[in-house]
Image (cartoon, rainbow, N blue to C red):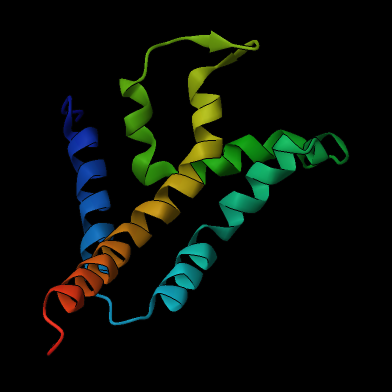
Length: 129
């Protein structure tokens, strides 16, 4: 059965779980950025391959966009919220696939960056801390 809107709710739940995991992580900023990079490395590699035209150089080229769609399956319902525009003879969600990996990576780093900034501000306000 299909329940309209449930896919959006589940995608939001996935993003909230990522946020919660990143917020409660005890890793340093460098370690957490490395974890985020390793998490999104396949999508980053495939996105760069398409953007640099390496997808035209081999027989694997037909599958790169499909693999990117599979990689971003948990957050792909967000693409249904975008308008059905066509840019450069490609639908808008095609370009979203290339932006999703860096966005998820930065979304994973935001809680750690916010915590680091808050600690620095706290130390400036109270030198005894």
